[in-house]
Image (cartoon, rainbow, N blue to C red):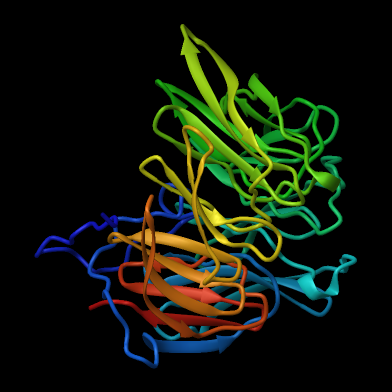
Length: 403
């Protein structure tokens, strides 16, 4: 039976905040309800569309305001815009001169900002971490993760999206003694820097192992967990990628199972984490080089993982988290990013086609599909109530998905 969550008769369709990379729980799933099961032939209703520069930073939304980042020649910009109209409320531009060796992929920015209270935390492609006043864009404090903090540089630019924990912001920095770092939200003071590992492009994830909080980070050649209060290493497992191209955010779920996946033939593995007293240990449950993720996101529903596998072509794939068995593959979609709500996957493929689908361990059923974007649509969608916000490297669009 296809997964379906029925909205209650009194379900709310009001805006729901999306304050960080991956949404409310950093897993690309929300409690939104009231989504339509089908669209007209022309697609869902487009509320507005506006020009936006290059980059892959996803879109945050809170109290009628959108926040994201984009690039333009010689600068990268943090933007606040009206969720109702798309019109700019404020912008903060920093001069940036960065160019990678793959012009078709763009020069960033890549990371997604973070909202905590009245502050907005944003990280640029050259590792410039900024704390901004959310209402005005005024700079409150800043650090250079590459220069000042001596972080490991990346050929495609810094890409990790910040994570909040208590009064801190956690980020990978990379290099000797600073694999991971915590900065005080109020003033930017470095609370801790620990461990040695080369940075990658993945974002940190907060998990709880039977009552113990841990921050998990996928680096250039390993995945590790640390105590978010002081940075003490709890465990690590090797997970090497060619050129350190570990990109996708790990997926955590029931059974204390962590899924990490990489493209370029590096493969995927499930890691089981166990608690004994106040100590944690991790062991590899399975490894497979039959599938991996280039740079999209994976979503776990029940014991099944759903994601696009490979660099290209990248078939939509379902895998059993407990065994690593491939349940099915589907080539209807080019490489996708996704969000899950109301019993449905909202799927955006790299060609700019938006689709609505139901999935199960038995297969995928496409309910609706429409071309809405273009230009390497690699940024995961943002869903707030029944409003969907999507972008490519030239534009940002708001769509109504309600019944």
